[in-house]
Amino acid sequence: MALAGILLNMYVVLRLYKFARLEPNRFEHGCGLPLLVMAITDVLTLVGVVVFDFLGFVIVDEYLYHNAILQNIFCK
Image (cartoon, rainbow, N blue to C red; front, side, top):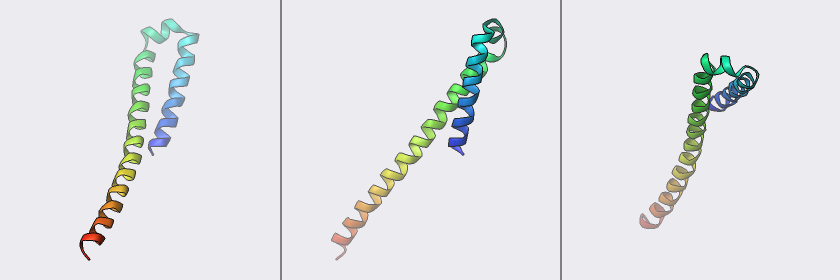
């Protein structure tokens, strides 16, 4: 779901960037600028969530693997 959110928010960022180039006055004085900031922060947050989940799985798996080896050594 996070990957879909990243892709959709990137689409919003690109559309708002295009809107900012075509009509800069409406973009700055309307709701375009806050929406752009919100979409960018959403992308950064979702990327952080994906990276944290990926690293969490790698670190936990590595910890459990080493823990299982130590248990085999000391429990015999």
